[in-house]
Length: 370
Ligand code: F6P
Image (tube, rainbow, N blue to C red; front, side):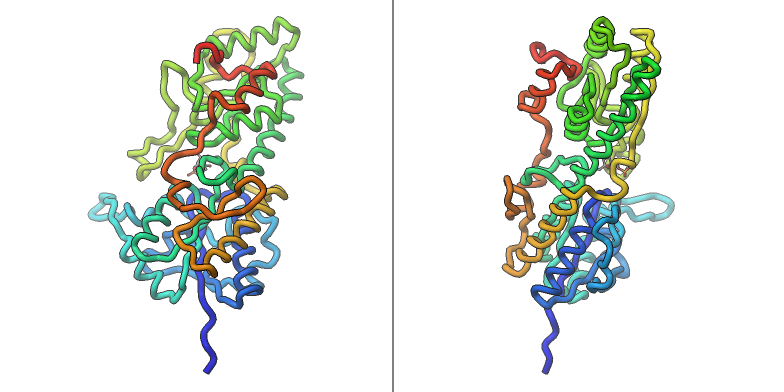
C-alpha cells in the first residue's frame, strides 16, 4: 500500500513585504524536491483557518515565476488575530478567542507542521498556537526590521532601496527650487528605514522614534546649511518619530483599529514648523505603501529563499517553536520568543547614529543633551 507523503502548511500573516513569495517558493521547492512532501498554502494569514478553512495545494507549478513578484500569492491580513478575533454581534464588534477553532481546522487539514511567515504580531500568534498544539516554525518578515532574534528581516533591504531612490529624486527637485523637502517613511516604532535610507540618500536631518526631536534643532541644522551656501535641505522623518514635548501622530488610534494604531502625519507637522519658523518653502512627501510594494531586491530574494529552505529543514528535524534567523552570514534557528518579547530598535548610542552625526547629519537633538 502506498503511504501518503508528509503534508506541511504555510501561511503569510501581517502586512505584506517584498520577499514573501521567495519564501513560499523556497518552502514548496525544498519540501517537494528534497523531501517528497505535500505543501498546503493557507489563504489570508490566520484568517484562512477561521470558519471554513481556505487553502490550496502548492505544487511546483503554483510557485513558478513568483520569485521576482512583490506581495504574497497566498494573501495576508493584519487584522485577524485568532486570540482576539473581531466578531460582529448585534451591530457591535467583540473580540473573541477563536484559537481552538484554528487549532481544530489545522488538524483537519492533516498537516504535520505550520510555517508562519510574519512580523511581530503574527509570530506572537504563532507562539501562542504552538503552545496550543500546532507544531510551528516561524519566518521573520517586515520592512520595519523591528524583530529581535535575527540580524535583519527580509523586506527591509528592498524598502531601504526604495526610500533611497526617492531621496535621490527629491534631491534634484529640492535643489532646483531651493526648498526643504520632508520625506515621511514607515517603520512603526523603529527608526531603521529612516536612518539607513537617510544615510544612503544623504539626508541632512533624520528623525527617528528612538530620539525624540526638538523643532528648534531641526531649524538650526537647516539654517547652518543655508549659511554654508546650501539653499535646500532634505529631512527624513520616521512615521513613529515625535518631538521631545509631544507625542506620536496617529491617523487612527489603536482603540479604533482593533488594537493596532495607524501612524502618519508627523511629516506634515515637521514641514509646517520648518516653514513657519524659517520662512523657507517646504514640501512634504509621504511614501507610504510604495515602500512595501513591488519587486524584492536581490538581497531579499536570497534571504527569503534561505529562510524558506531552513524552515523546511527545521520541520524535517522536528524542531518546532523555532524561528529561522540570520546570524552574521549564517541562517540559524532561535526560539520564536526571542523575536517577539521585545522590539529591535535603533540604539541612540550605537555606531549607525554615531556615523550619521559624524557625517554632519542632524538627528533632531544634539548628542550632548540626549
Ligand atoms: O509593519 C509594516 C508597516 O508597513 C508599517 O511600517 C506601517 O506602520 C504599517 O505596516 C502600515 O500598516 P497598514 O498596511 O495596515 O496601513
